[in-house]
Image 1 (cartoon, rainbow, N blue to C red):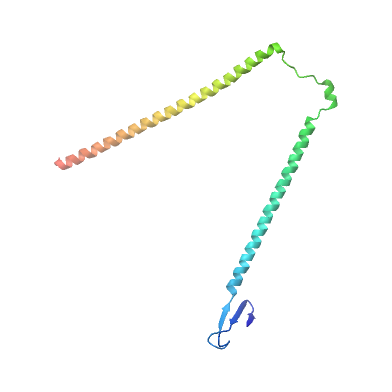
Image 2 (cartoon, rainbow, N blue to C red; image 1 turned 180 degrees about the vertical axis):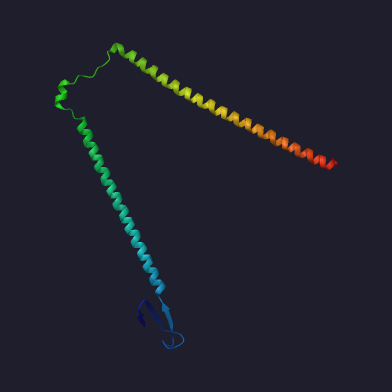
Length: 165
């Protein structure tokens, strides 16, 4: 037996003696209905946010592919040689075979200079680290000396107190 009281959904469960007897129970389903509605609303919201995220990702992918295609087209256009330039273009200047060892030697010297600069920078950093460690050790020594002096002063005062001085 069910009846509808506006906002409330009331169900009467009949007991062994019927609706008028002491065993009739009224079950209210308001809270359950509200919880179901809230869960459905949350699921709908989650689904809509997921759908929006998917759409955003799809748009991002589309724009990225379009930009990539534009970039590819631009690079292909820049690589194309125009006919007017082919006539006036000169072949690239190549060093004669006799001068190649000189160019290789110059390149090696340049590489060595770069390596020397890197070594000097590393040495400077190592020296700075050593100096920082030495300063830290000096500070620790000073703190240790102050602490030992304070301990000796406390011991001296406690001995004076014990001797009654």
